Length: 146
Image (cartoon, rainbow, N blue to C red; front, side):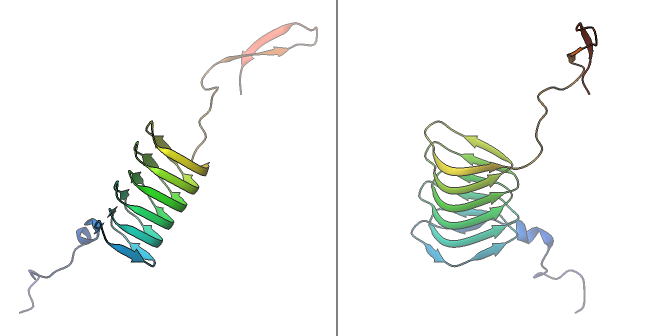
């Protein structure tokens, strides 16, 4: 009666199941989830998730998406804020504001957005490269860059 082996027991893994918005489905409103999304229909509103968002060829989102990563084959209009990677396939159409850590764009994709790249800036001058410094006599002295 009070055993730990319950058939309907919810686990942490259940939140990682993919949420699917099928083709010919339209949702108006805000969506908040811990799990990933696949959107083949239309969403007008805000989507916030800790998972990945995939927008298929027939998918369209008008609003704001906040999440980790996203793959687009379909269309998006609005504000996109991702902590990870935005991947645009050749059929993707993006319009609006984009803030991402990394951006991957296939040839043929349309990207009409103000883009702000977040994350660490890579140093162009790494290692023990030599930098020339002038001395008092006007001669150049070679030293290591700081």
